[in-house]
Length: 282
Image (cartoon, rainbow, N blue to C red; front, side):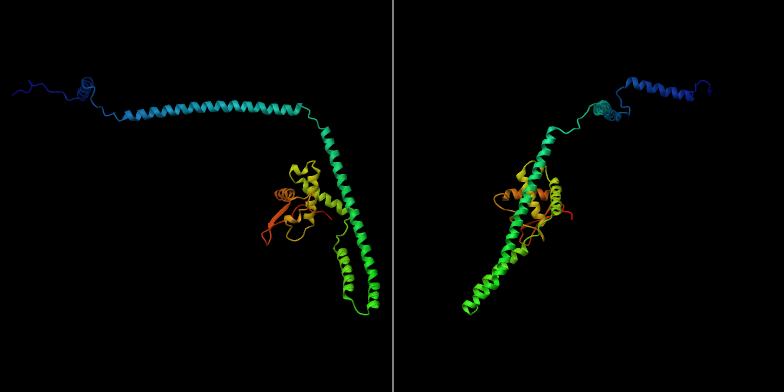
């Protein structure tokens, strides 16, 4: 049997590759709807397109913000340059105005009025002290003669008259001992400076040209400086008709707000006010 009559099928690589390529080409043309195995990329590409669009919009907004900031920087730099040139070129008046002179005269008038009131108070205190000394001298002089007359006329002791003379002497001595010492000019000036320093720490309302309010503040500060112990209640400051409860309460609230007065509660739960501001220097 001859084998040369049957042709042999070539098995070369080129033959196999060509055969496979032709088969794939035939499949793509005849069955184009067949699944190719890449369908899972559809959803991913849609998401990628959405994210790319969002990224593009964010970049555009950042560009707009950058332009706005650049415009603001340029405008603010121009404003600063204008302020600097205005400060270098404009002449501001430094001399006092007519209102300054009026306020100075008003302040001088108030100071003179307070000094006059202080001098009148000192004179009244001196007259009262002189009268108390005269009364004490008269009582001391009258005591021996009163005792002799009593013993001569009655022959027995009369406690009523003796006690009356002793009571008058004791009351005069008590008044003399309880009277505060007269402050010197230096002490009064130091106290006025301390009061002025305390008032300068208060709100503008209490530093204005209201003479009545300033006089009330001075009296309250003076009383607080003289207080000792744990402090004074509000009733100790009220004195009609000038020092009413409303005015005293208003001033005390301002003192506490400026840390000039410390408000505490006493044993009876009553508010006590103690001075913590500047004191007169010796």
